[in-house]
Image (cartoon, rainbow, N blue to C red; front, side, top):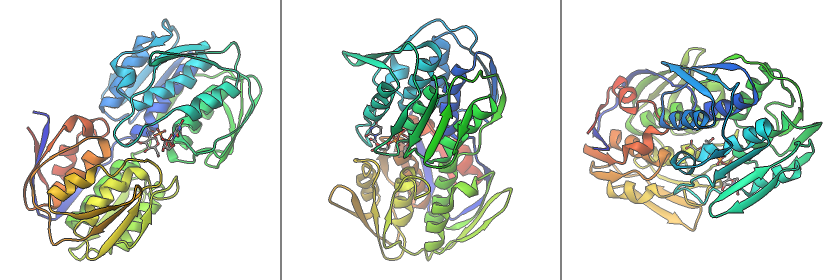
Length: 417
Ligand code: EPZ
């Protein structure tokens, strides 16, 4: 069965180690294509999206091997320039290979990346930026071919600080002739990790962490050994769990410096937070307070990926909370599932949800439709009295290495079935 079973209603106690970051490792794997050498990537999470990215790299001739959480990627002999099939359409981050393939081979044909239920997930910003760098795009029946003789550095201003578009522009700019200035770049920690990886490999990038990046193209890159930082969204998921269920947990390796907006929300709910170099200590009791208003924003604002997990935690907080989802147009799909468990949530217009705290949630059968909504249902299952069965576990396995192992570490009665 593709399900997770949870017997909830108890506070969380225990500690668990936070895995490497999914949204950091995927663009770093793509960036390895720009380095005709061997790269060793440490602390790589064992998740489906990494497996899919590995298959894509192998499909174009890379040699990828893995021992536990260390990936070795050898990109010295590439063969194919067409990527298609389930791996590309089934995974959003395959689009990050676009910039890397153009930087390495000057051509790539790929299927439009699969979107998901949270939104239409267009790639117009990616394609418009690459056109400005001299790339020609030919579209045909759900596929497109991107081709360029030589990428040209230029000035690009993104209308939206798109994470994926920023990544693709950086990957193309590293191999472009001349300098690329990217304005209104995304500032997410995953962008910083990508830039640090490339800089250690020999790229020249200024303004890392800011909204204006300056990339000097054409520098020869060499293989490196690189460690992926811990996953701030996985750590945030477990943080929301103790806010919802109460208890005392320690999250080893939690990247607390990247979690300030989440920690601020936790304190607003009345949690006791202690941060250290080793990780994050959180104590929360039953009397969690509601958050009158919170809006998801680009980094360093409250991350959209934490919106559904927060909604689950707020469903039994004292008082009324309002959440505004400002990044994706359809990220309240989880509301119906939480209402099945007894939550009192009303969607106000397209972008706001009003959550009135109830005494408790009741376990029942619910269905995950995407990654972070699925994680939010696990949180609700920890909070709910009785048994919760979450269908479509595979969505959750795209981003969580072993969510049942982690929650068992935190004292939850949880198993797959
Ligand atoms: C990345 O997606 C993450 N995925 C998402 O995490 C995350 O939610 C998102 O950034 C925002 O932080 C990975 O890193 C693999 P965007 P991405 O481009 O790059 C619109 C998860 O759960 N847009 O910053 O696709 C878009 O529709 C996933 O791990 C355009 O209009 O996000 C959205 O409304 C979910 N045109 C907004 O921008 C474009 O060409 C932000 O999207 C590109 C994006």
